Length: 113
Length: 111
Image (cartoon, rainbow over all chains, first blue to last red):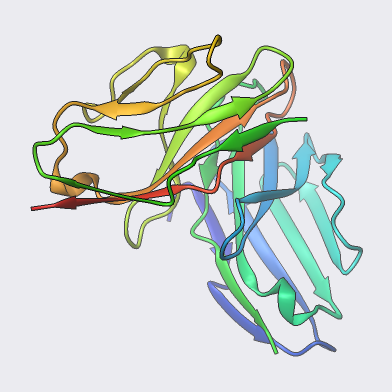
């Protein structure tokens, strides 16, 4: 599959579990993003990475820990989550200009029990 | 602070009728505005952006700085236009573009 891929597509975890979401892009982009999409709320930007450096942390709780080992891969490490963290987590990538299109992955549907 | 408002959560129109999805924004600088669309069982994707001044799938959107609006319009709606539409604003002039999204409008085109 080309473009932006995300694994797993679905994840169910308990509040004491530790899990990771993975995102990979094959578009040669240098910016990558994590978004949270939950019911009744706008799509929320969580983290931005620019050339592997985190440039934005949108007041995200520390139980979410991003990692960007290179420009093509982005992880979101999860630990001691709460049920209200259940949502669709979207990854995106883009070029660096404000006018550049962001390309989204299919998302990981996370359920926290 | 940046803010994007889409006042309609749901919008239904008949096939062949004109459609307008409203978007208003709040931003102190010069914004870059986008419309993203999500069709059923597909991923979120760009529909159009104001800087391109293009018409995509018959849709157009004009940036009105006086009214701080970026409404999406199409003169004749088609069934395949049924989808979730998000207006988004980028507030960074350079560097990674941090997009701020509205809550979205679900458009249903009735045959």
